[in-house]
Amino acid sequence: MTGLLGPALSGGWTAQLPRVVPGGRLPRANALDAMTFSAASLAGPALAGVVAEALGAPSAVVVSAALIVSALPAAWLLSARPGRVRDARATSVIGDLAAGTRVIAGRPPLARATLTSIVTCVAQGVLTACVPLLGERALGGAGRGAVLLSCAAISALVANAVLARFPRSVAPGTVIWASALVQAAALALCTSGRPAVLIVAVLILGAGEGPQLAALFAIRHREAPEHLRGQIFTTGASLKITGFAVGAAVAGPAAHWSLPGAVALAAIVAVLAALVFFAVPSARVASSAGRAESNS
Image 1 (cartoon, rainbow, N blue to C red):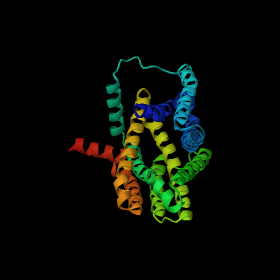
Image 2: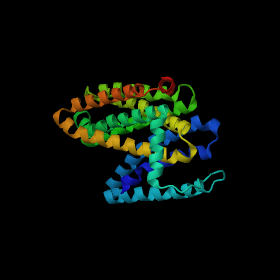
Image 3: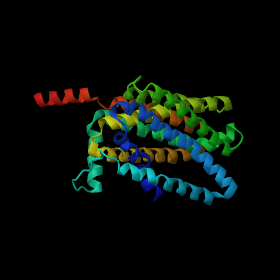
Image 4: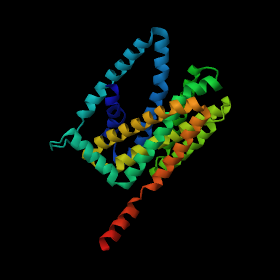
């Protein structure tokens, strides 16, 4: 049941950003918004570990629920802000999701970014499932694998802080595919198994993850129609979560066969993510193809 609401939490609220941020400040706000994901992925596991160690795992779950409840006032105030336009049309949830999916498939920049992010999440899922084994073999304990996730989160936070400083320095589409290649290189380094190299590799990995998320948000905000923005963000988040789950599921038998082989598989998938970006025709190419077909 928690998983059913995950996409709404991770994507639905980000979709509301244009309602509270002027258009000229949206690129910087995207980077800052992505930083909150990195900060949460850094603070959340650390807080859970401290509470679980001191009071037990059930108490950590209670703290998690309390944190979600603490977000309700902000959610309530957002819905009351002036300027929010409600769509008066009566539509079903399935109809909205179908419409959002059609927009994603019908707009090449959005389709490119979405597919690339999904395939990248498959690679991230493989690595995350391998983290305890990497911690055990390289750092002396499975529990120390969490240090690797913390290093990636810190690096993502720093990378997005730099991106927020220069929000228009690189086109979001370029960031999407280039970040996938950065993550592929980092995953390839992870196969070495040496502690120092592994730490450097996850720092590079985070430097790719953070900007890619910010660029994905920027493309979604730019391409999504106002009345379908929430559906597109939520659908995109659910697809990414599914990709992550697929990667984690594949990692189990792959790591049992060979841990370096499983991490190498993640690197290959990340390269495929970059290639997927170019496999989807650009808007200009798709438009030219459509005109040629109509002329013939």
